[in-house]
Amino acid sequence: VGNVKQALSAELASKLVDAAMAKAEEIGVPMCIAVVDDGGNPKALLRMDGSPLVAIEVSSDKAYTCAAQGITTEMLAGVIEKDPPLTVSVPASPRITPVPGGFPITVEGELVGGLGISGGYYTDDVKVGEAAIAAIS
Amino acid sequence: VGNVKQALSAELASKLVDAAMAKAEEIGVPMCIAVVDDGGNPKALLRMDGSPLVAIEVSSDKAYTCAAQGITTEMLAGVIEKDPPLTVSVPASPRITPVPGGFPITVEGELVGGLGISGGYYTDDVKVGEAAIAAIS
Amino acid sequence: VGNVKQALSAELASKLVDAAMAKAEEIGVPMCIAVVDDGGNPKALLRMDGSPLVAIEVSSDKAYTCAAQGITTEMLAGVIEKDPPLTVSVPASPRITPVPGGFPITVEGELVGGLGISGGYYTDDVKVGEAAIAAIS
Amino acid sequence: VGNVKQALSAELASKLVDAAMAKAEEIGVPMCIAVVDDGGNPKALLRMDGSPLVAIEVSSDKAYTCAAQGITTEMLAGVIEKDPPLTVSVPASPRITPVPGGFPITVEGELVGGLGISGGYYTDDVKVGEAAIAAIS
Image 1 (cartoon, rainbow over the protein chains, first blue to last red):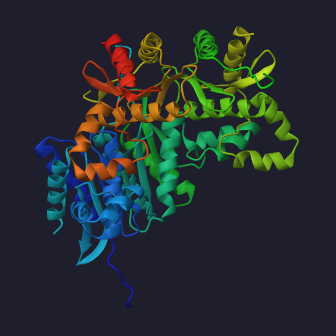
Image 2: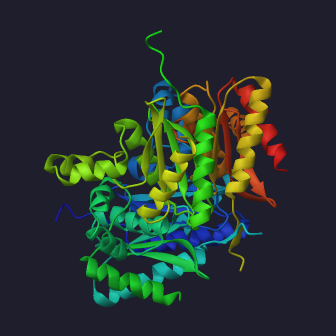
Image 3: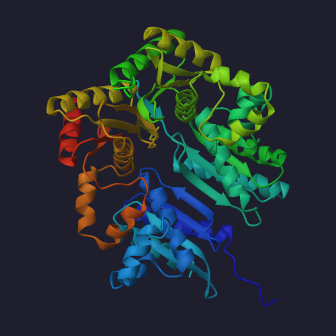
């Protein structure tokens, strides 16, 4: 029983998508919203009408990055900035991105996946992601 | 003016996902549901709890196949069976699959994308996909 | 001077595309037309309106196959049918296809590239490709 | 019917290719010219005689970038320059390039695809692309 882990449910993933969509509509910027589980594998995705094509890849990479590292992509950006080896290695890793708009998803303090938002300038992406995370806290 | 085309909305994609989920719950088989647009790019995805990991790739490939060819994957299977060159070529194409459970999505008779269902034996996948397509007709 | 080779010009590639388009319009089946050079690299491509998405990949693979082997894809289909090892190996080769509609392009008897046609049932593809090859002979 | 959208026709794509070719001949630099649609999928390509092999990939990536983001690759370069997270993430994205010579294609103000030019120094590529975009405006 020591090996039980919290898991990201489809219900939680859908709540994140719905809350992100509501905030994106409020600020008027169509987003692509991606949710991955603790294995880094897609759990839910929704691309709003008018969201740019590139947002599929970027939102998915942000979600993966946070499931893979347990911190926001914005925190990763801060870490990289002061650290030459990371400045070199991160661009070489095709799915790890330091662009703000990625958030770890936790349940009872345990990392269960990642949320990635892309579609606007990344300050918009962050607003939408923060609203989604707040909605499940 | 001849170049205006119908487009797959996020609203329609969400209706397909919801209807597929309802049918999957009814038959008791958790599915991964993938929707792509006319360019073969992801529009929506939901992986139900308990759906196998492989269902992500299979549902996505089924959706892509139908957006790319305009027929169900079951019809493609029928075409291939009687046709040696296709029997050879289709397995070599990484995203084209003849496994039943993929459906073209049309709006006003125009192809706007593809729906892919995976998670059960493919006869189950077909039931779920048919219910979803019926829900938007 | 012994190493001079015939080369596929952009002019010849454009003639092939134009002749293929004219035949496709005549039979009323929109095609994707792909031309590769002797290195198997893209020289010209045109996707007619209404041609299915999958035709991009299929026409490109047909063109590559013919530049790589010097025979039509239809001939390759005939060769494979009678030859078990090839029946196994060809599907494992991602860019080699035996689906009819691919033609070698020759100048003064020398192989300079491949033409691939896809968009209809492959008997249509063959009609269009034959008309294009005839136009430059 | 808010879901009807403009589409890139083969006729428009061919006009872009022809106008780009004319300008490339005028400045004496052979180019590879790539056009993709709103889904980022190839619509037309022509590699002029003497254009370097690498221009196929570069022109295709420029075209994809602009269809995926809706701005020129030159604008993207400007955005990245001042923004550390993007400086790190863009090189990691295999098809997104900030090298000038990529242009969004719009019809009635709607993004329908991307044009990519490669073959010379990128200031030449820009001249050729601008001439092509002007020819359809």
